[in-house]
Length: 112
Image 1 (cartoon, rainbow, N blue to C red):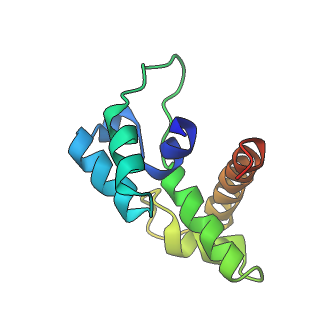
Image 2 (tube, one colour):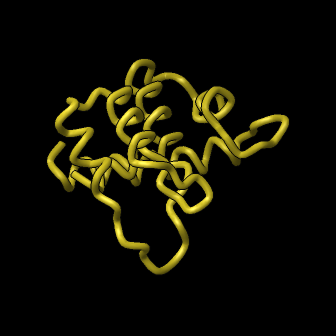
C-alpha cells in the first residue's frame, strides 16, 4: 500500500509534507479516511539513490490516456507536465510516457 501511496503523494525531499497534508492528499485521491490515516502515519525511511519525484504527473497522464487513448503523449504533456519549460514538446511527452509505463507495471505487479 505504501508503494501505491508514493505515486499519489509526491514524496520527495523537496516537497516534504506533514502527516496532515499527506492525509488530505490521500483523501482527495479517493482513499477512505481509514486508509488515508494509516498511510499518512507511515513515514518511510529515506532510501539511497535519486529521490522519487513527479509521480503524480504519471498518475494524471495515465488517467487522461485511459479516458482518451487517441490522445498523443505530447498533448498529454502539454496538459500535465510540470518540468517548468515554457512550451512542452515531444521530449516531455516521451518522459511522461516512460513514467506511465513504469506506473502501469507497478499496478500490474501489485495486482491493481
